Image 1 (spheres, rainbow, N blue to C red):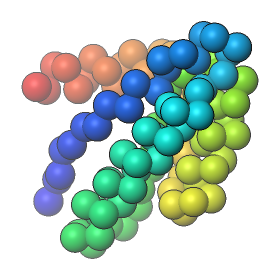
Image 2: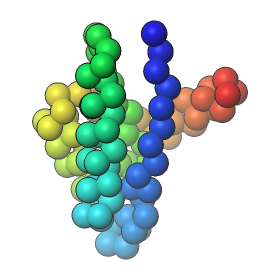
Image 3: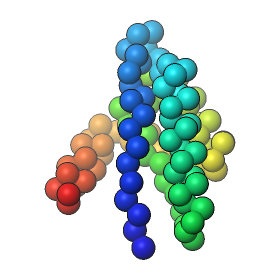
Length: 96
């Protein structure tokens, strides 16, 4: 079974200021991840991979946030490069 969901946390809002993800953005991110973790509890999931995108690449605290997500949830977090992000975005848009 495939469950497709999306939660927008607007993580990049304010990230350009001081080149860091804001505390408010981090809190929104964890609230969304808590919701996803709750959703996943209803399914047998063999593996979870989190793809972290552009804001994680450019914000000074992006790698630290990725590490905290991995620590807190036990999920593998991969900060993907721009080309991979573009390819995945295209595939998502093309499949509706």
